Amino acid sequence: MGEYYDEKNKETFDYNTQKIWEALVAIKNDKKLPATKAQLVKLTGLTRNTFNPKGVRSWVGGELDNIKSDRISDAEKMKVTKQKETQNLNDLLDQSKLEILHWFTKYSESERELEKLRTRSKRDLESLEWYKAELQKEREAQIKLHKRIEVMESLLNDKLADSGA
Image (cartoon, rainbow, N blue to C red):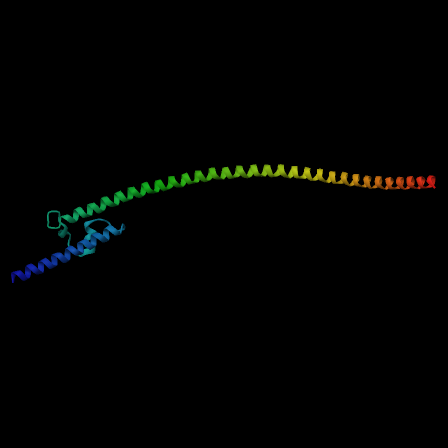
């Protein structure tokens, strides 16, 4: 009969140990749950004396301390990470400002160059129009001269024909 109770006690002990581990995992995964023996009591339904530092389950206090220290180091890492993220964003902002300044300068230079090209194009167009007008005048003068030459040749031919007849 003693063996029955030994086996039953072992099953109960193992079952309670399993509940303790599940509660520790829940506390570790949920940052809202405090890492305290009182929270373990709520989650497992066991008594506070079950977790006595001088008892068989004294290891539970060490596990809770590990969870607390992990949370502290995680909080410090998060703080460092947020500071690093802020620094990275500030660096990115500074780079963006420099790039904006670069492209604004390029835009301003392009605007000045465009204005110079427009002025030069306008001047070249005016010059082209003037040369076209001058060419037209010269062609008209050339046509008039050719007509005069034809008239003079005609008169000369008539005079040569009259004197040779």
